[in-house]
Length: 146
Image (cartoon, rainbow, N blue to C red):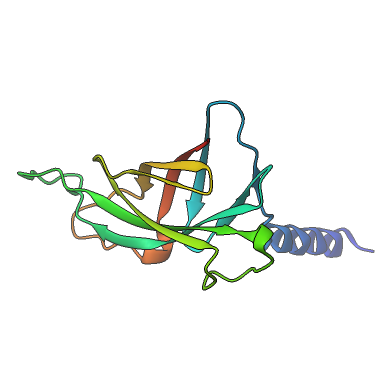
């Protein structure tokens, strides 16, 4: 096989691998575990069967960079926690808890299924006159067992 063909096949294989999303598993250790989720992404909180997912941003009024604002603003995200041990894998089941976390502020933390989830950041940060596509958001969370 020619070198050019091998190079082309290697590039194709790398492109395929780059498109694959491997599920990350978070094992809460004593203390807090930090994780980042993109919109539509979820992770299992091991050693439990609880799955934590990022549904969407429900509000983002943070003051854009380069702008002088009277108020710094805030952001609200909607997450879900699903107990997979109940034998269902759909978020419409009664074994799902939806939470909205607003940060900064006192409502940036919620508890469900034995976990405390706290929102600590949201990327990207707004820039003046540059809309953020909903699928671009990534939420940074701290998860504590107990």
